Length: 612
Image (tube, rainbow, N blue to C red):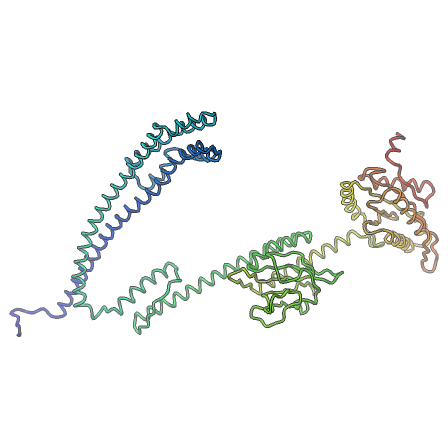
């Protein structure tokens, strides 16, 4: 059948435009109704969530109401003082009524509901006096009265009344929540129905008019990419991208989003590495500053032990120092419990010390392990040996090993390891130089004996120790007789030779715990710890005889006999340790007045008192 139009017919483009317009209008209408339905459902969820919050807040309040009664009753039933302590603790911990229901007010309870709940809490609090009265009666021996108070009908009636008020409060909540949920559900159902009708009409038009334009291959990728773009905008780069291989604008968009995600992941990785590098640099800087302020080796080892675990996370280790006398590397400190390296070994047992380079036989490197490692099985542990050198001198070794309990093995930058070792080497070298300079400042250059500065330091240390232990400290003050004649007759070089010869005798005469000092000019001093008066006098006589037996020549000329005068004083027999040196010096003057070339001993303290 062919149908003819009497009037002008609408063109196909016009019909398509009207269809587009109608589709847009219906789409907007459906979107609006869906938003209204979603808003109603949101109110419904809010009401249910508020009821949950109120139930949660009320449950703790209800438990507080009955907790004190339970503790008091359990104390009466068992007599266990623990229940009384718990009761007292809970009673002291109770806040005011207003404070206890504040969180319920915050959860959304109405004024009437709060008033009802406040009444219940106040009635529960009135039972505290009866609980305290019952506990006092029980402790006074009136168990019957105590039980009548806590287990009586009046007390149970009051508890039931509190329970009834709480139940009524919860009933009010349930009814209010039910009304809110029902109203929201009806509104949501209405708007949902309208939305479904509009969506159905829109769907028909959409399928009839726009199906050939907005196909599934366009809509679905756009929706997915829109969600992913939103996550990427929030810097959530962990989201996975859909597999879109279309060769069109959508494919180009997916490719651009993929590149953006990869750049974001790389940026996050670089930022994390930068933060780690910055933290490591700060720790190295702090460690270097602390080491530069160290005055002793113990201080330096403490700084190393404190900082290295954070600079090399996941690695245990040891710091070895070289003992020149024994030619051995000795562990000075360790951290995190290293297991594979010996605490002491010769330098030849470490390949890093042999080659003067870092040595790592594992972690992908094919190399021989060091001999100081204790190997368990055929597999070499992941270890790293770093030689510590300064100006070509071998000072020690920094040893690191990966811990077996670390799930993620952390890598350490070679640059930071080199900086770490260099800083430790510089600190050790500075400490050695400081010790050497201090030692030089404490030694007399001519005789090689300790000088007066070292005497003050040694005397303070020895005096404190021997005073604690109740032991003697003897002092020998020695002066070369007629020393001026050596300088006048043979010259100052001969006088220096005499000082050196006497110093050599004194140096060979002291034992391990004893020290010889050049006190000044031609005077010398010996400190003899744990040596009594008689032994000190014998030692003084032996030294005087050795010096007198010296045969000294200078430029082929015999300098003659060298004699000395010696003053002996012992603390505490002769004097207090604080005046030991002046006492020995005074006795030395007495020896000189009595003819020189002799030993004089100080007078005992009891003799002083008798003479006085």
